Length: 314
Image (cartoon, rainbow, N blue to C red; front, top):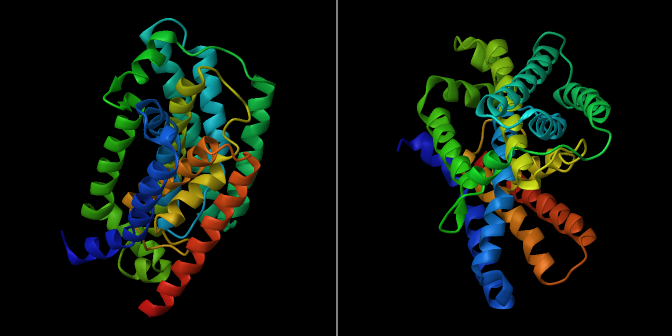
């Protein structure tokens, strides 16, 4: 492992420590937390957030942000619920269409950022709103049905892990290699640390930014497919919370919102931490409303800690 990779992965260490402390504390406080059923539930819930966190952290690496992931997720659940049918072909077509729309949304986001100089927050909120409108037209309320065989396969367990979380872990392994051991990954870090410097180094900044947003949309669509399996239906609003949760997961995992710092490993730990917050509070019988407060506190604390560390590094 090169020094550069070690430096980026090191940003995830605090989130790993926090995660371990949370697991130990929860296991001691709540007997329910320790049973196999609850652990399987945590893994299933973490699968969706961990995948969309990959999409978000890739954009954060280049100093951007992608709020459209929430509507892409909702759209994907609708596509799978409406068109997965009874055959393998139907399932593949519905998934490919969902991923295609995610890619197209990412393309619009990328072009808006690099060609028209629209701030990433503004353009991605705009595409988020547009796609949400499409979702509500297609399915005003939850409905449809996910292919039973496909859902059963994705829910198949190997120990306490189901296929969804295993696929998510595989995706993390692939993205880790891409980010740290390929030219494309190095380009992303370079862009995040300064577009002008990256351009002077011969990197095609605009092209790479567009590719990142396209990939973000595609990965968010995959997260939506995972979510459709979990809820067994489509829902036009089910993805709403994932925009901010994915940002929180990445930041809690040590990914900088200013770009160029962090690792996908941190996003994975961050996703599990946020999932555990919900799970622990549910097990303790705490009102779901307080979960938003807890997430907000964790995110603000992470941002403050990261800014302090950033100043120390200068």
